[in-house]
Amino acid sequence: MSAGANSLAELVGNWCEGFGKVMEAMADLHVSTEVTPSLPGNESGMLWWKQSLDATPGATIWVGAAEETWEFYGQRLLAAAGIETFTREELQDTWLEVVRQSLGGLATFIGSQLGRDVACTEGAKEEPARARALGCQIKILADDQSLPPLGFYTNREMLEAQSQISGESQSALVQSTDAVTDSGEGVELSSRASSTLNLLMDVEMPVSISFGRTRARIQDILKLITGSIIELDRSISEPVEVIVNNCVVARGEVVVVDGNYGVRIHEVMSKRERLQEGRKFLLPVGSHRK
Image (cartoon, rainbow, N blue to C red; front, side, top):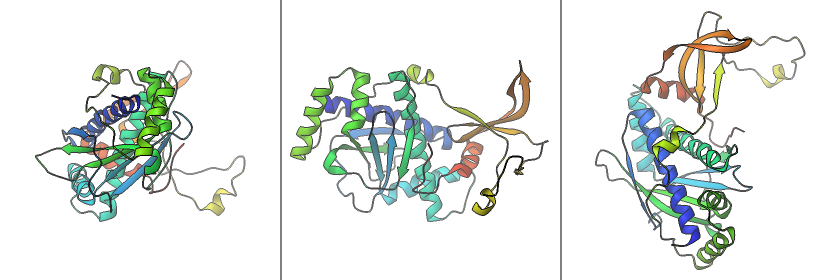
């Protein structure tokens, strides 16, 4: 197997494992994935999410799903949260949130292997630059449903970061990806995952505390000066929220420990509650966090 194929197989394997964990956490849905070297037979009309990562300059991953696929899993995720009525846009946003969270977990895992922070940066609904990308298809298996497979593309820059983990030479990777780009042929993939649960247990995740939120007009924000007060939507008696990877996982009270702020956990969110609360953090399509 070529260097590019090795790196792509390992990258896809890591993402599939993280994707399965997100689906289980958000909807208690156990899924398995099957990776094949060919690309989806009909990519027209697919919903694509383009995600840049700061693993290396220009590193990008695209994940695409047919409407039938993202609608089905969007409905399952919202139903698990006890939401019975929803719009097509809500189904799409819910699916994209799963994709974003799984890619965020992949970025964190890659960073742990490289020994430095790696994060998702810009993201948007955008089709892959197929001329400069390698790809495959991923079939999700859950409840014996036969649904169109996902499309997964990545570029040379992203594979360079993965090759640093697997120890492949960069020159071999470049030659491999150039050959595939020139010929337009698919890459033979292995569906094996290169990471294990024990490795994932060592991955560090950013934890933040939310004291509250509010919305303000731009003209009011521009008027802010030293001493201005911004009123939040939370009273002092209400618990603060513990947020991991844009998802509320617990609530508690603020305490002081050795001169530092801390949070005493009073409530741990259930899987259904995490999905309901996580919907508050859905990014408008085309926006991004850094």
